[in-house]
Image (cartoon, rainbow, N blue to C red; front, side, top):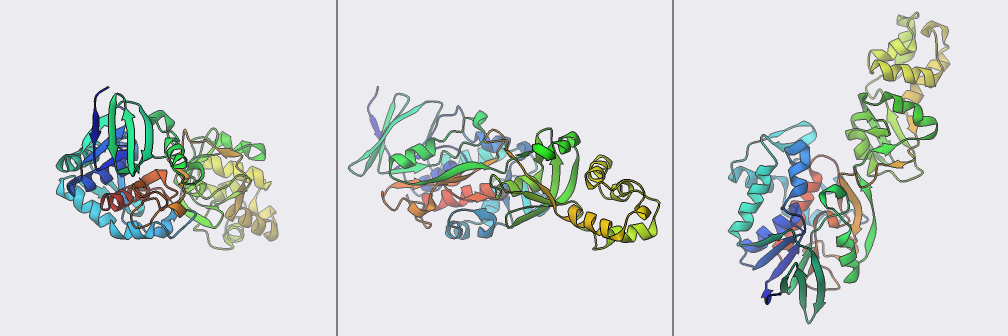
Length: 393
């Protein structure tokens, strides 16, 4: 084992937040060591957005994030905005485009974002080391000490940027929480977010619709999202469901409006206009045929519309407007895009991301109890929180 190398700051985790933090601090003249146990930096960035990286969202605002303290994200998000990151992308000549709902993607590849961040860390002379195991992280005399493989290091500042346990096949673990607890920080119970929901019991019938997708409004708790829902062989997925999943808790229902654009009384009007049509046929104009058939069976309205009373049709409208599913779980961290919960914001400064109880210790990105909506919001939190810490180190 060689001697000990001294730095101004150690950043653990070379993902989006860690790379941004290291580059920001390095360009301010700080001697920064960036460590990652994976064999390369930015592995989650590379697979994001179907390989094109949904790197931010122009509609970013603190109301689009979940946290035990909904105000915590305001400061960092206000000081490093989507426009700031877009300016960085433009400076590096990376072409991008806007998709639906303010989501921005690379025209080319997510590799361009990783290359950009590496160029920024190089500008800051950041020392990057990957592919070893981290051990013996300790703190005494206002100094953090640790070992990475056979490399020993010290610094007065340590940044936890190792993310959460979502997508374990990429090497994700709960390391950030273990380290935070060791240094006296509390952790809000982590749970899968932006994750497919599983169905059982009376809802199992809907699994037969695996592969069927349709635009809906999905609601969990007080949150509602209008995007596509997808039926799977295990339950429900698609953007609307992934969004709702972050707000869903075990034992609670998820309600779906299958016809969010339908005017009140549309089914009775359909009866007047086409009395010999079936409900499945009436639904088939707006929904996939297989879904229309299953909904008709569940509503127990066989035969022609003309044979149904107006009251029954009005009741069917209500059911279709607020169809209630009772998920029995989620597909877990393995399929979750992000983690909700994490290092409690109560112990961190919203200005600097530094621990209130231990000067020099920081936590940023997904490791913290701040979770964004689907569509680039979690990347924007990574950039903003990384920048906030990097400006302080």
